[in-house]
Length: 439
Ligand code: UGA
Image 1 (tube, rainbow, N blue to C red):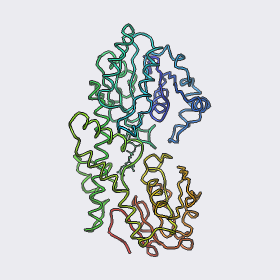
Image 2: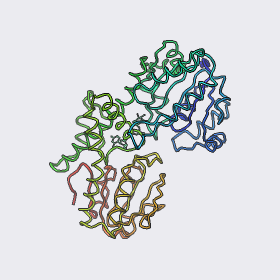
Image 3: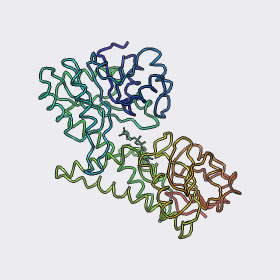
Image 4: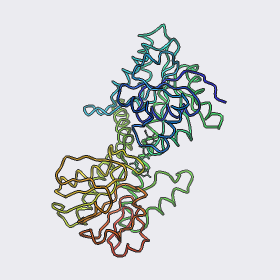
């Protein structure tokens, strides 16, 4: 059974905070959520999640109905909590490349002002190595009598499967200076521990490093297969089979070996950059990560060049259909999406861009851009159809239905999702990342 060990408060109900709050509440724990954004809090009170995430809508409504989760803009309303999870944003500063910590600093100050003695403040946000130690020193100085403790507890959720990931963690990382604080955080994850999920109890620096190293390693894996994919396109072969062939070696593992337009999203680009910046600041250059960033950035440019040569040197005046805007399937997130960069680059070259995405929205203030509400509408008059996101809808789409609409039957499949065994395929030119040209 569930024992309510602590009164839990989650500060910052963005992506990470909301999943954490709903997840813990689903275990039967009582959770108070605090966010400065009054609009968001009002929506959440009504059970409307501000983000698109499978299962979240139902889980939110259910935990509200059971009285397990409440929402407020007033941190003072959570003064009775003894475990505070902080999940505010740490965006990259345009100026320095460092993660900006102003939201986190402010949130920790607000919590410290209302928190009872011996409260534990758990940092869920991704923060530069050393941040938690710095916060602890500040609390010890500013609120010595309260004996507040900082704990680092990074999250490893993926967008699109965040709730599922929350309930099926492969490990829980808890970093803190004091053992008692770590133990109290560990107890809030008792349900996972009972299932044998490994718990890594460590210091704050190790915990902070684990988060960056995990994302940087995965970004490296993706970049590695993308480079091999470029090779396969030239020397011949099939990148998916190469990936399977190496991935079945358990030392390598099958995941994150899908070739594509390069990694994007709100985490990999930001975290790899932050790790490189941290390395440089400490005089320990992270050369692999720096190379990965460079390769991934230039990949988007190379893709544009490839489209240019397929369409016939000039893109100006040509209509291009971009299928998929989200940085990956099953999310509405377009942050640092390769598809979005491509849209901008195409517009800059003078192309006329028509996009379609089943969920994501992209507003571009340009007279040659239009987001359509169907694949067919986006394909009308197109000299090239670009598949930029791996939505299932694109996999099963019968392109025979748009044959009469397009200016040229040409698909550039950056996700290798289009079914190349379909009967319409021989009537089209199909180019895929990771395969030699099919004509
Ligand atoms: C990533 C991590 O996977 C999570 O563990 C982590 O918690 C999260 O960042 C975070 O730091 O918050 P996410 O950004 O949601 O999650 O996206 P991923 O599913 O990891 O994909 C990242 C990018 O890599 C996407 O652009 C995706 O298209 C690309 N990718 C991924 C590939 O091109 N090939 C692959 O095989 C896998």
